[in-house]
Amino acid sequence: MKNFITKSKISKKLLQIAQMSANLPVNIFISGDIGVGKRILAKQIFPNATEFDAPKLEMLITKGQISLGEYSTLILYNFNQVLNKQEFLNKLEHIKIVATGYETEESYINKFAVKINIPPLKQRPEDLDQLILNYIDEAKNIYNIQDNIDIKNIDYDLSCNGKTLKQSIYKNILLQSLDKDEMATILRDFYIKEFENEKDYKKLLQICEKPLLEAATTVFKSQLQIANNLNINRITLRKKLNRYFGE
Image 1 (cartoon, helix red, strand yellow):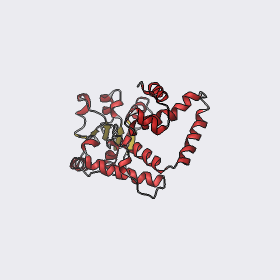
Image 2 (spheres, helix red, strand yellow):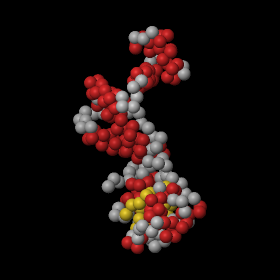
Image 3 (spheres, one colour):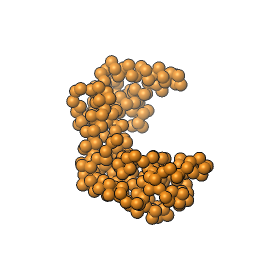
Image 4 (cartoon, one colour):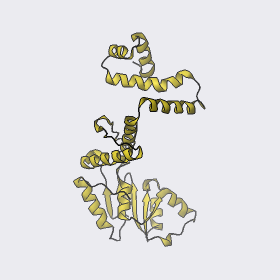
């Protein structure tokens, strides 16, 4: 089981509150944006509890397809997607609950004595730094990379916190590990798959041409430099930039 990262002061405090609450006869609600670690923290509170997607459990209860008597503790994910929250919580009143969601509403939040809000990773820089190192190590093990990775060349995506951070690190490390022949093989296999649905040469070509021009506009300062470095006619370059980017 993964541990909730507690390098920052706020995360240490949140984990302390969670651990203290685990021994109390109260419900706990963990809120925060996607990818901040709500599920991981919930599992640390009740490591052996049964987990449910809350809307699915609501459906099972409504259809009479589950017996709740066997449960003393539950972890419920996506609580905000439950349709009839008050009725749902009434059915679970004899069970200790840890629920997660993106936000809280006055209509039901009084059923949770402990409320824990996890801030985004941008507000927890110490946690972010540790998570970056963890994901880099994971990716290196998966892709069997022995060399050191230049973290300065990784374009981190924090739009969905840990979720997109992990995706961006894995993608960047994979790309850093590939040589030209391996990249060509990947593109060949991609095109083989695409030929099943798309056989238009121009549409397939832009899959390579558009990102190539995006990279060129990032690296080079002017269209003249792009044209010179790509060995392409400036008029042709302008037409391509206008086609893809409206420039």
